Length: 116
Image (cartoon, rainbow, N blue to C red; front, side, top):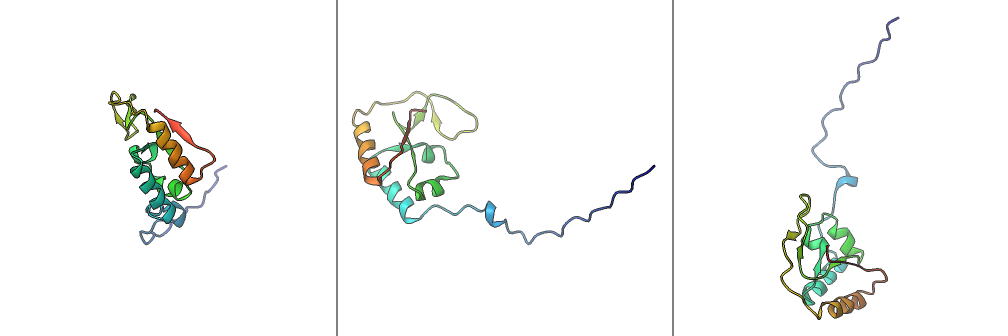
């Protein structure tokens, strides 16, 4: 006994626009700018920036960041990550205090700190 399956016609091509759920807004909201200014002003590093995270706009707009300690260099060499790899170049003894000031200024209740 043979079963006949209907042939589905492909959907007509879209107008080239991506669906709304796929679009990511460019960073630049008020909280994003405030967080960026604070991080750069305190000479701090975040995984968000160093790894070129595509979600940075959303996270920073919501006041969330992952701080990197011991500079902007990671000892690992993951092929999928944009963080500079190598041997950390310096030790900054004032970095913990600057991170604490940044966290207080942002009013964060939960903070992620990593040396990657």
